[in-house]
Length: 442
Ligand SMILES: Nc1ncnc2c1ncn2[C@@H]1O[C@H](COP(=O)(O)OP(=O)(O)OP(=O)(O)O)[C@@H](O)[C@H]1O
Ligand SMILES: [Mg+2]
Figure (cartoon, rainbow, N blue to C red):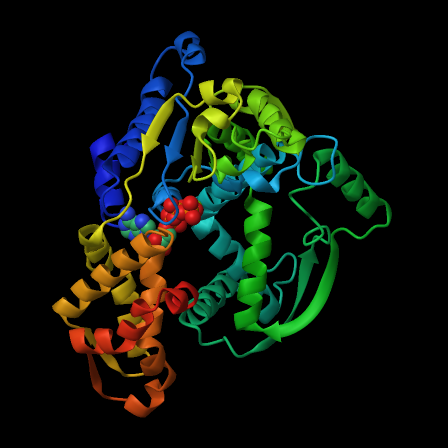
């Protein structure tokens, strides 16, 4: 990762409108880690990541920012919902599983990277296997002339194979299947997975080659998977994945406000929510978590927590946890202007999505500018009148406007449909007028 904070923000700007403070905080946090890695080891140990708490009402882009970051960066990343966890000792997922998930993400990431590096070796291995099926084997002690001839036919076969000339041919191949795959559940504690693996070995379920007849085309695919696993140096992957996880990993804890205990409901504190918060402390602070790939130190993992904090406040989190999220950023709620931009500007904005969807039916959807403005205005009004659900309102509003067009798309094949201001009013006015109806429909 060599992007500067500004470049990160610029990238995010392509997808998310506004919310500069949040983007900036995250960009700086990410850059700080690159900076940290350049320091002497001793100093590195001292520098803790500055965890971030994002506060903003629903639908303003909290999760979206995280989602975009993951796509951009080759960093291990997991997004978890705080409300899914239960206190240690209770049935349910314990908070440590988020670190196990992160390590798994890191393993997958590094595996992919290694596979990319291995592409040509993998291709060669697959080609060799298939060609050996097709060519009669060269007898031992063959003359050098024969060997030369074999080489020539090998090369010829290879180019035919690469061209896809042989794709339809049927051959018989042996595929190694590792039968623990599919049984694996990453949420299980590592001890249990170990037991399971041992068990599979005892009953001999593992690595029995399977003979199968298939087309060369399918064989290519099947053998590729096998070859890439074979060429993978799992030990190297693990080592690299551990480093990447511990120093580059990001855990995004969504809905953190759901485990805050509102001071208003003074009657009885919810023991399980507080328990989850307490369980989170050591992980955020820095501790070791056992995973099936060894123990992972969480000291330098970056935690980003997000929540709407409608019913509770950040100060309703236990003080120790608050202190572990020193950076607070508030996301703005979205006004009419921002909503208009969200409709039009992002790379894959909603309008572009609808246009593309309708295009598959050969219907050209055209949104007129004052129609878009009206959509933004009505969405804003609906947000004011009812709950503020941010940009999510655009989805419900657009759905309503386009419902009929979408339903009858087949009748309009090859046509151009203009979404005008009048059409928007026609579809929405009587809904917006009536609060009760609006509550259900928009
Ligand atoms: N500022 C923004 N720019 C562009 N799109 C946005 C913005 N805010 C929200 N959206 C769009 O609105 C939808 C909901 O946003 P998101 O999932 O980020 O909400 P959130 O803030 O995480 O809300 P919640 O608290 O309910 O989880 C997404 O489809 C996203 O693309
Ligand atoms: Mg969210």
